[in-house]
Image (cartoon, rainbow, N blue to C red):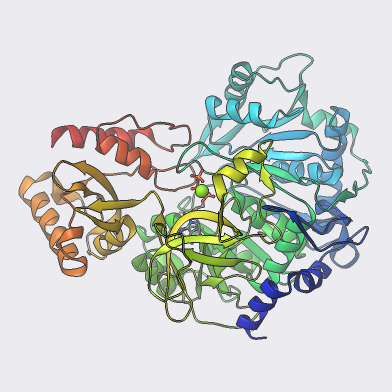
Length: 631
Ligand code: ATP
Ligand code: MG
């Protein structure tokens, strides 16, 4: 089928379109209405219908593939690999569900999951879905303050956690942080369910902390049926990455999400039942929810859950897994590819990757040098996809499962079915219809199935944060800049707050970064606008050099800085030329690998960097502070 027609139908006849997609999943009770948009911008998909995420991810596959792999857990941290068939996963999820029920969890209760990348984390998510509890996974790398604020927001009855994670072979204890977070939080969970991996000793709080190993044994033969819930019943809450400010608690439904994932596995990710999917993300992020746990399993695929670094024991580890498990679709992030790019490319040709159809990348802009490098090294299609925690599945990409279409470097692709994407001129509020004109990427309501229902416990924040009414229509803002070319392909130019204004010229930081990263000695770059008395703002670039060995020498450093400035002059014009190019060994990033531009900009302007609870490595910011002070 022609994708343009497919997309048009999804927008013009959404009821017929989505009723058809809804056949990809099992319903306990059929829905009465496909799309109830009587109270915009709130939308109810598949109202009146009843289903269950866990049933669709696990139980319904028992008939055809009980003994096929469902969850393949690989840890290069503790050197273990366990394959769970659908039958075994079914048993484990029921054991976990029985434990949660014993600890008092009921339908609609929240369960906070604060776990490393271990199979029990997936069991816990699926067990919640099974009994109609709402999970809230908090990334295991967060420390007590971030965790406490999420505990207060989700108000869980039970927290599921583990003694420790492990990073680069070093044990990272969790329990102390959890106890501290519970002390800090105003809300106190009734019970804590601890998975003891035997990595780090921990103190137990009597009457509150329960041992998973012990309870699991007690419920070894548990039979816990799926609780049929309304399609609109919340399945989970999940926080955005906090790149631009305080994280937002995204609330997702059940039926719409299940349908959206099933459809995306078919149309976008080309996943076939019985095959293996490998997403390198973490269950703490939306990619982990949609494409480690739910999406592949709903599609009847085996999914690989990987605990470890992409470079340990060596940079071939991911590709060795592709070979071993005949992975057909792989999903990662540009930041991970950049890590691999610094390693010997021979690792990529060492393994048999013939099973792999494509590598999907998302989460941040995919710069051309990185895209070209991985495309050449792998010899496979690289499919960029643009979306958000809020959307739950891709907004812009290429749906090769509907119609094969070429990708363009630098573009994630075209609007996906269900998304009525518009570019809006920020100053006039009018829709941009011409090609190559920059605007804010917005989506006309209703948002398609799978997207956020609201901000958890805060309908007003949902409306106020995301929605604007333009010409009688409700528009959702992605807060990203974009441009569409004559072929309808979109290019994301950065966040709406990433624009710098140099003497009246509005420049996207992304364009300057693209230009700088084409210099052969630039591994990574971040550009921010800093206040300037004369020009209003000027660009300042922070660069990680590929080869920094010569840069301790002042003259060499100034030469490279000059070369980079000349490059920008030549490509974009002098107006975009950074006032300074400073060399650093690391950039401040969130734990999901996104550049913390607002913090970088604040420090570059000698201001307080604000909320840093999601930062990965505070020393990166310290380095910037020192450089800026020296200048
Ligand atoms: P917060 O909303 O809390 O500030 P965040 O926006 O970083 O954090 P996420 O939902 O994890 O949280 O990230 C979504 C954002 O990531 C998008 O709005 C966009 O800016 C960026 N992004 C994701 N995928 C792509 C892509 N393929 N190309 C360009 N940018 C992308
Ligand atoms: Mg965001």
